[in-house]
Length: 581
Image (cartoon, rainbow, N blue to C red; front, side, top):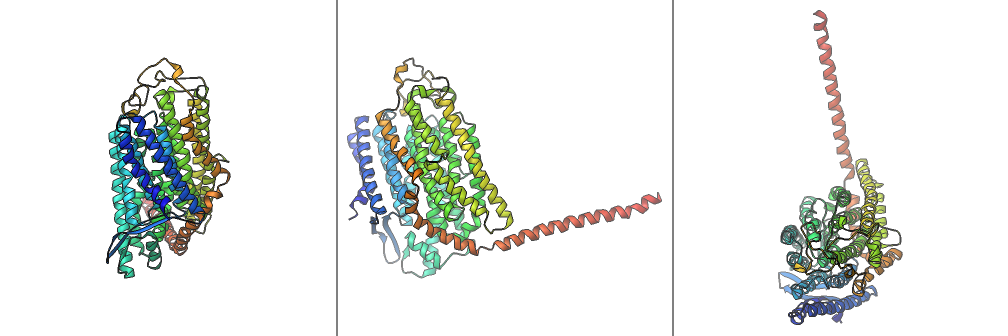
């Protein structure tokens, strides 16, 4: 009964061994095997997704570490929060393999094995229904990406890989301790004979036996450490630009398209439903950080001369929108944040793929080295424009639907019945979100104008050249290091590259034109989360906050008035003496 689901989860893992067997002597055998495995996995993932949408979900639930005292289960399944990210993981793995087709020739079997291992971790992470299982897959994704960056990256690949690994590992360890504390609390309060690690059971138990606020806040910070670094939320973003710039194209596609969303998914899956009171208390701070990240990421992107670094900082800005929607804590905002997770995976994954294709042709990522490429590669320019329009939220494409819901939810929150000081702050953040859309259009359209339009400008290194680590020869700025004069080597989008990009474009239009197709399956699960946090929001003592603020303001006014009176008295006391003199 669960055969398609089992095959979807196991095929990438089995594929790593097949790639090693058939690709040990030739990079051609490695990439063909990896492509076949990823396509079959996508086929089964599509079947599982369609079955879930049709009301016939697949689920695996068997004991793992289970005895009289503890119950850890190998429990995998899909729901509204995970179904689309599960399918997107399978789709973007195919894209990642296709964009690496000509770029990776050094240790190709190991490279494609790491990609398939990474796919295993991503699929498992979104399907896991047990905390231990989720954490295993969550940590598992670090290992293959660490090697992808460290072996096949650019000049600073080792430093980038280590920084990425240490940042995310440190945060995830705190997250694990927080999740374990939740399990122990539920076990102690409910008096169960077995300690459960089931996510659904824990959420239900915490609804009946909520943690005290102080403990919730402590655990929220622990979970926040891992998920916010993974997002990455400003100012915990510093590992991301370096990782993107140094990673191979496939690594950037997967990192931007899927792995960053594990952070936002973690907030929706764990922090909000399990720690609702702490979520409401922390909401103002998270909203401020989200708004700051939107503006900061956009402004820094404007200043970049490297295409990959520009898109990396755009991810900081766009993930700020996801967090803004989620922590608006209302229906519209959460729906927009969840939808934007998918949108960002499609648009930014596509942008990194196109930039990788440009890099294969010219061996440079520097904007100043390029210009007028639409004359040489018109179809590639069309794809770049479509992904750009999606990224900046053009109506009719997927980015508009997500950003519209997020900003509407944020403005709705700003006009809520919260204290005036919060209304002003949230309104400012909402306006900053609108301004971030303008900045996003600025840096993305400016990038397209400089690279693809205007006078034709090509660097000397425009022809394919042998590459160390599959990346071509370049200096530490990503400039072309070798000069070639064979302009005939530059070609437009070929069939393989079109196959990698066209499915992303199709889904961009589909979500943009009929967003309800994707929103409706997510709605029931998001409604449950929204109901939990809405209850916490309603009982939050906003009036005492406002009263405290009023008391502080009144006390400051009284102190200022007393100081003024003392100054007047002192002046008056001194007047007779001066008159006598």
